[in-house]
Length: 100
Length: 188
Image 1 (tube, each protein chain N blue to C red):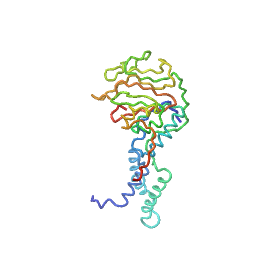
Image 2 (cartoon, rainbow over the protein chains, first blue to last red):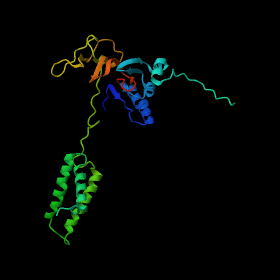
Image 3 (cartoon, rainbow over the protein chains, first blue to last red):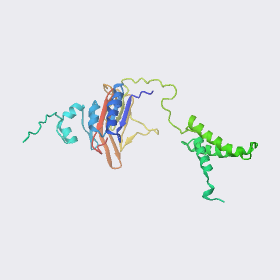
Image 4 (tube, each protein chain N blue to C red):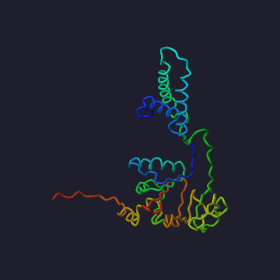
């Protein structure tokens, strides 16, 4: 088999079912990187990419708005608010409503 | 007389046989089948000496065509001339290419990055996109790469009046997944 050094994946999960898309990204795309290749993934599924990428560029208006590791992007309020409309994803414990 | 009723069951079978035997995946296969089966097969039986009860040879021809269809579908479903496909992994595996750490492909939208050789088109002219020169260097020893195998420096791409990307600089490193995300029309 050929062993390309670089993979440029342009929306590899387009039109795939959510579960298949997750398997493709967490399984195959991740495995390419583990095997030593450099993998560039353009994706619409931002959360899925953040889950598997080592470094993520956020583009907007043709420019790089942010570039960081997914962990730091997820922790950035500016990013999560602009992208997902919510603040940093801090695990919150919800309390069951008290019976009145 | 030419009428729809002239197209009988037998013609349909011959047509199927021609396509199956010639190769359904290629135009030339269908043409070859159309020559081989009706011409080469139907007409050839004229020259087979008659034996047995009258009409036996003509009827055996249909048995033979049926057998031919079955045999082809079984052993060579792609027909005589198969659909042309790119062969992946066929033949001897190519030698793995050793890529030294310095082998970085750099796409630069401006000449800001020092040490990059100017990309030259086949006619010797400088390559440019939207009036800005594109430089491309393989390899590039501009800076310590840290596993970078692909780098774009200040790349701009226009489609008509639409600035798809304007001055984007990214790096893709060996052994990593690099994500490129953004809302629709962001330039990904």
